[in-house]
Length: 480
Image 1 (cartoon, rainbow, N blue to C red):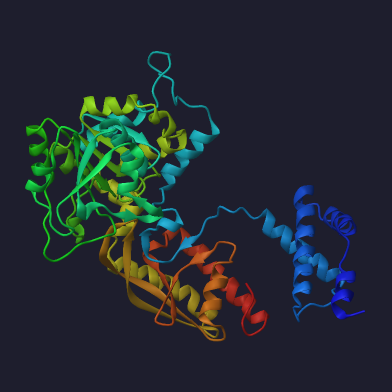
Image 2 (image 1 turned 135 degrees about the horizontal axis):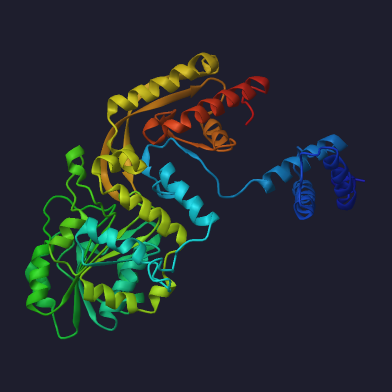
């Protein structure tokens, strides 16, 4: 009998393993594992070992009962761990698309608990005792903050653009500058959205320069809408020109056409006062007279994922009547959190303090250095024999497609593990009970403290101390 056949015959039987595991788990009253999880954990563990044997893996060997029980329990632990998890963002990217974009304040998350744990007036008027509209819960607030006549919220900004185009320009032409036909994250392409909405794209101008006369010459009897699109994380620099919102509105009014602007990461605060490049606010575009303005709720606004549509009352009313509105509507969690965030904007000082996205963007470099030093002090004596740890200046990013070329001065904890490859170190930090996500730069691992919340510092320090403690107990490359 060859070794491969011998190893295959030595694999334990699924039913026997399940019985032994049930007995083992019963002896520990704190553990409760659903039978389905237990069965699939055993089956998948044995299957993985069988596949390794069939591949001829040299590491395969006959394992003891205790070794198999450890493998099964590890697999059970993996299967019981939620897929959707909290992480600590040490990347320095504030609106991190892959890590959940804007985070919410404790006050807002408390409101989410209320929305989920209790009944609410989602579509019930407390004044009349009759059926109400969910949109009325935030529309007046949005209008007050933006100066718009009416507002509507859908599930994201792509949906906002889609339903607006479908309502205003189905089977009609939409004129847009060639330089604004961008693709952003998630394969969101303006031309594709326009096609699916039923609108016919009519691009004008050159990639880098579009003039008012380009729009004017393109207008025909089939034209329904003039569109401007914020280019998000794409920039054309140098010899450039584009038509302003005011110019586009005047041209549209002269030709009895509607206007629309997709702001992408729409902001309610002029961030140039904090050293950021000048970008138009939602209020400025509304004031310019644009009929429909769309922007995201989960980027510079600092709220939940949502697409916010503001503009002229008659136009927004038409969009509300579109049957797609039912398909794209938001739920009670979005409504609750969005209202909470929007109310912060009634006092801009409080908004900058209480909305995490704005707070992270506007915190000073001096404050960040103190935060980094605080973390370093707590770590240095505990891990300095295993890892060099320094405080270094670095550059954070806004993220979310906003201000892509702009870097924000920041500070980072710089790690240089002594007995571990940097790639292994980074990988194992992602496997911690609370995954720690940083970045590798110049052969060092950095945690940019801009995106580490004060309330996370204790967790961050404990995770790293436990991690290096487990490394010292194991082999040279540590265990996570």
